[in-house]
Each structure stands twice: as structure tokens, then as C-alpha cells.
Length: 350
Ligand SMILES: [Zn+2]
Image (cartoon, rainbow, N blue to C red):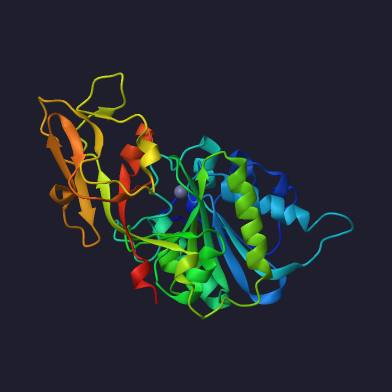
């Protein structure tokens, strides 16, 4: 039967690890698995921990952490049973083979989950299948593992301010980000089934990120329950994402030395998670161009004039703010965004 969708977008579902999978590097997963694959492994406790890795093909941290962890349960004679069942989604293996976040003809695999507002694709269908499969099984918790390209601390993201979700996040880091947008991300969809977190494990390629993610996943597999009691406000730094900043297609940008409509501070990444005072200079602006950044709040409204101004050829902050995800990677800035704007949120803890 002819399918309207390319076969590489068909979800595979397995009930054991294919031979050799734990030795397979992200680049080779596509040839071993053939496409995105959901693997269910048994454990001493049910329901399973759900973990997704490689939703972005250039972020190997989750897969490397998990295969190292699973290999440790295989050492010696035979295989030790996991302390809890595990359902594992290995996401964009085609992009991983190419070493990119997503292929040019693919949507972002972390914007196509139920709740997404983007035009429907076969990837939307696939993620609906994943959520349906996990709804049938039930989940203990959900963990989606990422790294980023800028200099950021390790942190967890939640989309619901619920104590169990906050405990799941603070098990990874005291830095926690609460966000409602962008829509269509894994943790919003899985958060409807149970406690869900997105992990940001530092810069791509850092061993420390893999070690941290591995220890965290092992701790999650050993947890009997997630506490309902409040997280002490002294135990976490909660931030709320209030806006996303993009650079309009019509503007060129870069870093000195060079020529562009905006030349950003070369130390831009150092601003991440810092409380920047009003007047902070982010870059120099070409006097012949009209510079306006595209800043959207959680309701999708353009709020650029609230945060940024141009004076004396400098792009400045109009009010104090805390940025995250600032990066020097120009392709990522174009594909995703320049940064997110956050505010402190500890006073809103449940
Ligand atoms: Zn990512």
C-alpha cells in the first residue's frame, strides 16, 4: 500500500535492544534502526520512565548517556534487570547521520508534538503515535535530553508548576526554567501524562554533560516515587521565559571583525543566565539600517520595543533582563532564535 509519507518517518516499535545497538554511535543509528524508534525495556517497577534522545540530530548527549548507562547493566554475567521499566524514543536518526539539528526538508522534531500549531506533517503523526503508545502504558516520568550551542549552565525545563515536576527538574539542577512557548515541544505533550522535564546538558560534545545525564537517568530509574511536597525555595532558582528573540531575515548579523547590520558582542554567550542591567550593550548597529529585533511574548505579541533600543549606534537593553540560549552559532540563530528572555519566578512557586 502506498503511504503518503516517506518510510523514514514511520515509527518503529521494539521490545528489546537490537544486537550491537549500545555500541552504535549517533551517526550510524539510521542504518541500524532505519528510522525513529520507540524501544520498551522491562524493569523491576512499572510504569516506565520515558526518555527521548536525538530529537535534534546534532545533540548526541542523550543517546551517549543512555547507551553508557544501559551497558553498565550488562556487565559481568548476563544482564541485570533495570530498577524500573524504560521506554526510549530515539528520534531524528536521519539528521544524526548528517550531524545536523534537522534536515532541510524536515520540521524541528521538538516542535511537532501534540499541541503544535505548525502545519501538519508525517512527523506530527509520528509523535501522536508515541504519545498514544505511552498513554496506554502510563509513565512514571518523562525526560527529554538536549544540549545547546551557547555557554549555559546545566538546567531543567518544566511547563507545569507542580511539585512533582519541580522535584524531577531539581534532581538534575537547581536552575529550572518554566516556559509555555514554543508550542509543540515534547515536555508539554508528555507533561499531560505525568511529570515531565527537558534537560539542557551544556554545550554539544562536553563529556561532563553526558556524565551528568547518565547519573541523572540512573537516579530516575531508582526513584520509587516523586514527592508531592513543595521544593524549598532555597533549593532552586526558578526562571520564567517571557519572550523569544529572533533576527528578521532581512537583517544581516555577525561578530567583529566583519560588516553586518548588527555586530554582536563577541562575548555574547557569557550573558546567559546573568541579570543584565538596563543599558547593557549587546552589539553595534550599522547607522544606515533600521534595526528591529523580532521579540514575541507568550501570547505571540511583538514586544521588541519593550526590551531593546538603539542609541549612538549601539543595541541596548531598555530594561533589566536575564537571557538564555545566546549563541555565536549563526546557523542556529537563523534556524531557532537569538535567545530567550527570562525573569525570576521563585515567588510563584506552588
Ligand atoms: Zn535540542
